[in-house]
Amino acid sequence: MESVASAPGKTILFGEHSVVYSEPAIAGAVNKRATVKIRRSRNQNTILKSKDLNFEAILDTRKESYSLKHGKPGIIRYILNALSKFHDHTPIEILLSINIPIGSGLGSSAAVTVATLAALFDYHDIPFTKESLAQDAYNVELDVQGMASPLDTIVSTYGGLIYLSREKKPISFTNHINSNFVIGFTTKYGNTGKMVKNVKNLKDAYPNIINPIIEDMGFIANEARIAILKNDISKVGELMNINQGLLDSLGVNTSELSRMIYLARKNGALGSKITGSGGGGSIIALCPHNPDKVMKAINRYDNTLKIKFSKDGVLTKDSI
Ligand code: MEV
Image (cartoon, rainbow, N blue to C red; front, side, top):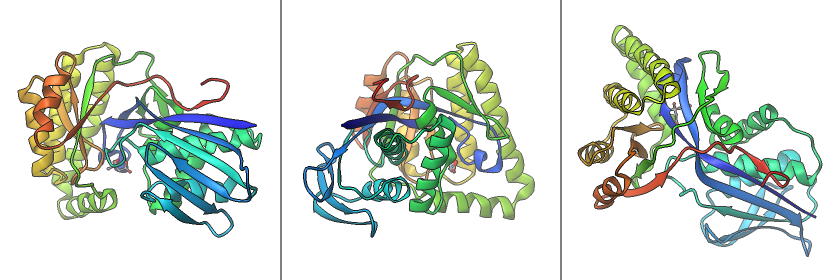
């Protein structure tokens, strides 16, 4: 028997950093996914293979260790942690395919974790709900990374565009943004933990200045929610630009991110901003008319990817 599950990457449209202080946020699943197949191993080894990431490893699920035949290990820790929680150590073969670039800020680890858990639950006939799956995936990310954003695993599980309320309740939008977006990413990874700490230090040093900025980001997310519901794309773009100014004031911008942001606007993006923690990492640009022009301009210095938001969250064998 073979179990299959897939889960999407995500991008944050509004609310990075302010969400840490319980302000609302908007994030969405994208049309780039991780797919995990699990079947009984043909020998005594538990094997993990990914052609897309060009790696193959033998896993020791009891010791939570692995020996790499070739490739980079990055994503293996998430899969091993998921197996340590929900697998009975019988030898299995795990095949991972993924078209989310690692380090692009599109939540590749959350997508792999959600897809691995869903495939594993199917393999063992363990019942789950989207709520329990998002929580289990969050726990895996927390174990592996020491800190994690619940947004990543919620969006990867539920799919679609999600408004996360002050009470951390995910509310799915009934409509959708159909436009193209461009993700621009540098090879300099952002360090989320460090960025969150820097913002906290700034907030502690200047509470009268920084608290209203964070609150303003919450107002922007609420205003954006209304704009999305009315399908007012230009307003969404304008709000992205305002949000970017506030993110810059929190000290999470870099010269590379700024270059991508302004190149996007110069080449016709309706809005562009950092997505995720900043300090390296990625930007998102709203490009309904000219994504290729924006990509060409950014590609002279950095990397890009054209994405659309996607309604699909986690999918298992029956729904794939
Ligand atoms: C990182 O992707 C988003 C942050 O808001 C951190 C978090 O939500 O945990 C910076």
